[in-house]
Picture 1 (cartoon, rainbow, N blue to C red):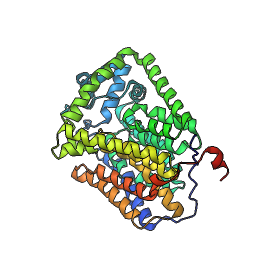
Picture 2 (tube, helix red, strand yellow):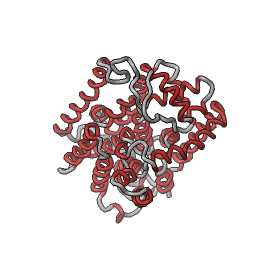
Picture 3 (tube, rainbow, N blue to C red):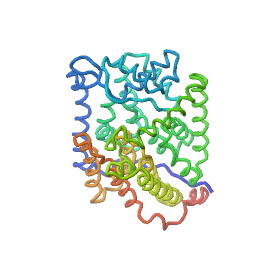
Picture 4 (tube, rainbow, N blue to C red):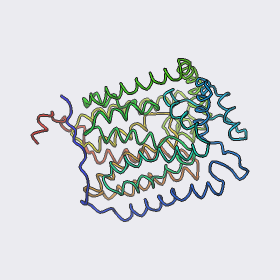
Length: 408
């Protein structure tokens, strides 16, 4: 029988915002909002004092879009050609590569941004992708404080600094989870759009099948296939061939050779490699964790645990099960934090929850200053809070059928 899912109730005025939580979010919000205008006009962001572009992640988006506009979209996946475009734009050479490795549908976004000058595209991308993230965070928390929490989340700094897509990823995952109980078709659209980063959607099919969320499941599949077909029409078969041709090279460079350096990745896989473990050992730990998380989520989503906790668990699980996880990708961690905040504001926070969340956020902040792979610790803290709230969920009876739920 399909699982009955109810939308989380709005916390309304049931509980005041704890002063410590409000003050910390306000300070972090001010820092995030004030830093980048100051950094830009003092030539510490996007361009340096010499007027040369600062090599950073967004350059690969603009360069890929430029190659699309030049009529050679498949060349965006060629590391050497891509770098030539990047060097010409920045006016300087740099060590390493900012390679393009997204599926062809994301070339639609890249080509749109490449119509604009680099600075306009960079700031515009960050600003526009921020909006759905803010809307989702506001909706999940259920009150205006959600906006403060969203902007104050420490990963906002890392994502904005390099012009990455963490805001969009968090918005799509958060939108999927928030809309699933009330607008399953819209939730499916959000999940289908997430196919531009397929490593974050691997757990969703398992959970959707376990929870009998067929509308979300099939809508997401249709949207993903439609996007792939549209990109094939727009960019040709060559773009998909190039994507699959260069993926092994990308995997070899980042997950085998550690070209990005292990401290930049925030997964269990990278942590094992950071401390000197072999690739085989790292994969062993990773697959054990992935299997454990997937099994736990399937059982949880078939239990009577509140929907907010199920959503928080799934969002956290997406971070635990991918080996390729940069700090900017941890924008997704804002989603389970928002669900936990919703629960706490509705019925009160437990004594240990705010200190624990403070420790998780502190770990994220320390990454900026220390360059240590502390992201996994933050994710595990949030996962622990979700499990503690859920209690002995594995002992509970399965969720009632829709007819039974309608009578309660």
